[in-house]
Image 1 (tube, one colour):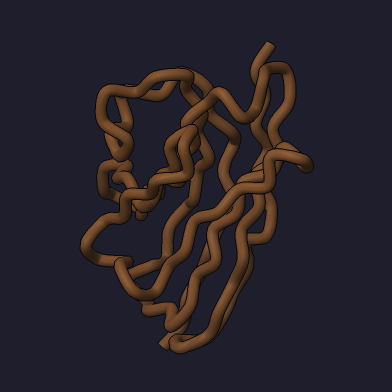
Image 2: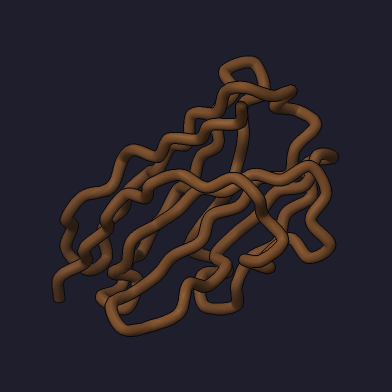
Length: 123
């Protein structure tokens, strides 16, 4: 059974940094695509960043240049380093996994989801 568990959220001032982690289990980690998604209050869940099995990455325009997605296959862990955080980055952040999403940043392409970790950025 595929399981992903997020951690690392918290409160930070604008301009600060956070690193989210997603620990995965129950499947061959290196053979799955992984993604980070976020949902702000009253808004839909959107793709933030994703990484394919070959290491190629995709980012939402709103986070390009500020966020970096990476994974450690030996530790079965996905990361999202977030720099230069803005108040509009405030959201619940979710980790997701799928063996073959057609679109890396497509929410409906992913079959396994974590419970989320909250990020709050104050101005």
